Image (tube, rainbow, N blue to C red; front, side, top):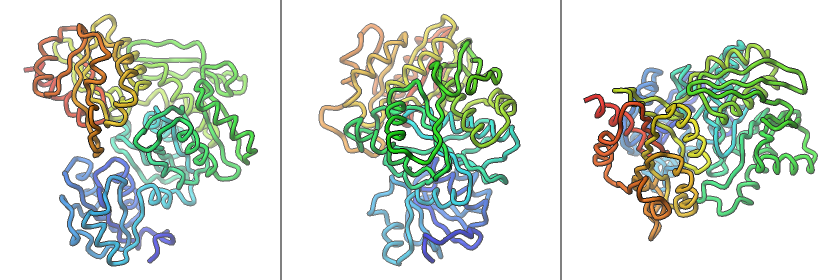
Length: 465
């Protein structure tokens, strides 16, 4: 059976190599919901895999050729090397192998799909759009790179014809999707392990927008220079799509003004093509989150949803996992975990943390993600972290990347004031130091895209004990 003609998933036997990742588990969940016989393997067990087991998926911990069973299609994550025994067995036996993005593209066929892309804010924006559409009665399918708090899951097979996907630009594979609509939140240099220059990032976003189906739409932020550059290039090519902008900028098609930020809330007036739609009120704070809400609102309108329903849905949005996620409040000390791993994201997160702390100190524990990113952005990391009252620097989380000689968190440390930070590679010592330092009214922020996500709970438990 060719991987290109599988459409009736009720007859499909699909095996996932690396099924535990946020992207892979979401695809597996949707395929299982469509009736496919799903199996998969991963190195570690998790609650995500428990959720797949409950849908009937057969899960193996560890990789072995025997795990393939009678699979007719194998799906692999980009993290799986060619030497993987399951992948090698599939290729040897002539079983078709699909990359994760190509598999998701198969699921999007025949739907009114919206792919949410951008250097920052993809997960939150895709989650907001999903929750807003659900409130508007659409019941969309969705595949997002984190658990949506409102739904308690990262993926869902909806009853409607809409499909919201988070489109990751890190390896350029999002050009496989061919969506009806695209949201682009911003464009900056990142993923320097794959892209050496901003020009290369611009090119991959140009290629991505070129895959929007004729008659589709692009919703894009007019406040971001990188996004505006893309708009100019798309218009010059005369693409057969509609382009709508959102932003705080006065020229935006969907404009946010009269912005009011509080420690745990944010609101703004919203106008669309000069007509006031009403007020967007969020249960989370941050100017960047108001922009994310503007993106979701604009895409929802493009899909034909009612503006009031969308605004009400946005007011119900309660966040996504690892996006300014409260891990505990003990003895007046708040512990928050966030995925931010780029200087721009750190600045936005610390701005929200400062607002949330209401005069209390912000103490940050930061784990840089990848040697290549640390090497390129060390100075910018130092500047962004200066907004924290005190920063503990953990050692780099490699994310499978080979070590680069001379690159460590010390590159960031050298650029920071020694009075307001310390290089602390030992996680147990960090927990002890942070707990000793913190006092009532402080906010402790664990920050990074690696395994630092487990630290917030440890710190909260240590404070409580």
